[in-house]
Length: 382
Image (cartoon, rainbow, N blue to C red; front, top):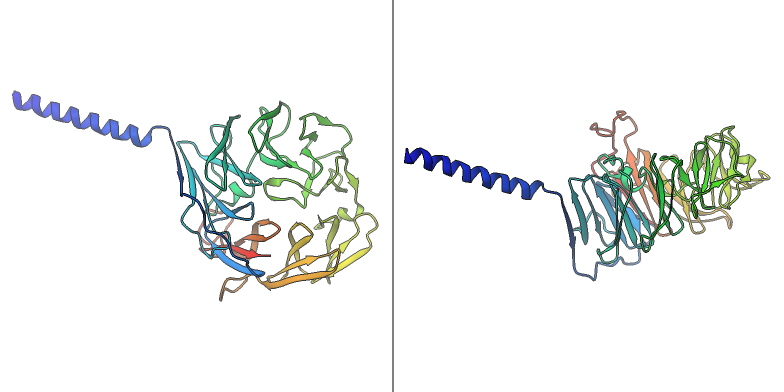
């Protein structure tokens, strides 16, 4: 009898210990890990490919790269490292999933599935501020995380304001302090911001400074054009009738040259693909300003530079206003054969990152063979 009681007691103790261990592992938790500064600094890089990565980086403040995974964000440096380096800081939450990430200057703002916003100073890895918002979509970044860092759902930037949008309500926050500037209902969850400070939904536009509806706007639904990451700062759009507009100002300006399918806008010029060239034209008059190789596509613009990718996969850094071609180099690392389709892209004044997809690929990003290679993201200095 004593042996039976002893065995029962031992079993009870073991079970209790297992429950305790399980709770300590599975209980809600946050982990912030920081490496003591100074962080590795990037030397002066000549124009050209600097590295290839298995995951998509959010280029922050021209100094660090921020990566996303299902329950964590992390950063590494130097920004021109050939591969992913040991994290200089990381932030993990459990059981919440990471929904998306944006950056304003050095501040990295993450949104989580429970609606929490957590802002981290990218230079130090310290938490700058926190805020609560409506529940957010879960992880949708797939293998590279590009969907979370370059195309986050319901997370946008307008100047120094972070816009969090959902079907129930939308709010704007000061990126530097986390101060909530306004909250409004009736906006959409899947819009985009313009360079002129508007948040554009399928049925209308709103002022990102106040959340109020904007009356003087063409009828939607809209196609955003010339946008930065996070569907933000878009320089143009096509309205519901297919007419093009410039949106760098508070009021859209008609741009007939943007009506053409496949055209886009960068640095105030419209880039139109034709059979024999990519032509940069005046948005109002249509007068040709520059011509570039046929089949070239606009990856993005920053400062006074437009980044193009040619049909034979050469990166071109051009200044269309002056006519200068600042740099041209193959979109390949080492002996790679540059035969790929373009997925996500980020262009900054000093760097460009390109997510490369296989030309013949399955429809599902989570299926093997969808991406160009294991290290499918190309980093280059401009």
